[in-house]
View (cartoon, rainbow, N blue to C red):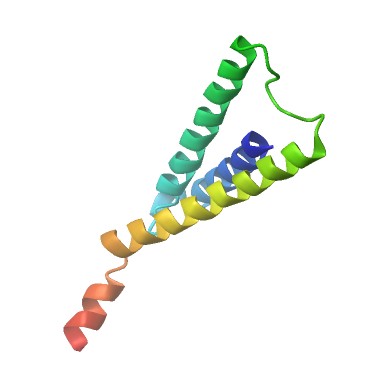
Length: 103
C-alpha cells in the first residue's frame, strides 16, 4: 500500500510538473523526483521481500494494509514538508529576499 500511495503521489507531481514545465518556478520537478525516489525505494523493499520468501505487497492482513497506508501518507507528507523547506531555502520567486529588503 505504501508503494501504491507513493506511486500515485509521484504520478500526480509529475503531471503537475509536466503541465508547468516551461516555467517551473515552484520546482515541481524536485518534488516529483523525491516521490519517484521513494517509490523506487519501496520497489527495492518489495523485491527484497520476495527474495526472503514474503509477498511483494501485503494484502491479506487488514491491519498491515492500514499500517502501510498510514506509512505511505506520512511519506507523502514528509516529502511535501521537505519540498517546502527546499522552496524556502531556494526562494525561486525572490519573495523572501524582497520582503527582508523592505523590512
